[in-house]
Image (cartoon, rainbow, N blue to C red):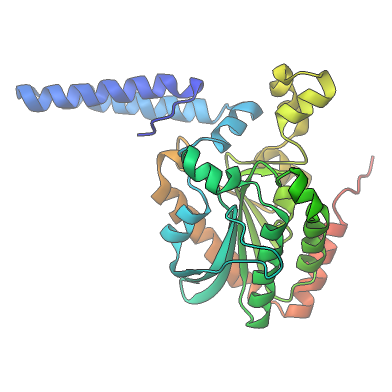
Length: 318
């Protein structure tokens, strides 16, 4: 059970705690409460379905930021084997907010890259809260080029509040590093599958977000700006973040309608933070399907299709 509880999750947690209390009482007192427990469990399932099928956009943003939600390294170790992390951009240094390396995924070798957050204050400082510096994007590009050299597909796992906006990052060319990645990923001659697993904010997400297939977890969000920042710009206050989230249309359900993403990855009932193993199992099955399809397409055709995919975005007919 998650330690961190969102407001709209409290009715579920209260019932689950009651079930646990009844189980302990039944075990210690030798009383048969199986029927009462079964009824409460059924009620919890119904409550979950009702709550998670009627979430607002802001509530989905909150779930995407849940501190117990699985991060890229969690998915890598649950879905893959023989992960060998590679470090450094060969220009400046190693960015701990961007992880990547070769791994064994079912019957193939893949290059997996992701934006990694921390679980507590110490690890968040180490990972820079999942906000990559320019050297992070340059490391990611180096690894993608390495994958292309050996003909291995690329999987990127995105969960970032954005690229780091500090002076040092700007001095080292943050915008150029992201722009370079967009240019190079568009013409990389190996399959690229992008997965937004949590937060997908701004160019920080897009810097490793150009792919043949863009998948998005059911309760993730993906937008040019975070709701709080949008609220701050439009209303000079963060108090309107919920309204901003509604207007941004940043959920997976919104973006599949707009053609920005290609597929929604279902999450376990209650969100990925409640069951890491099941979330990884679902994602793994879908990734296997996508890679199988993409592996049948010749490299030159793959690049052509990728470019056309992104050229179509932003065209509207009234």
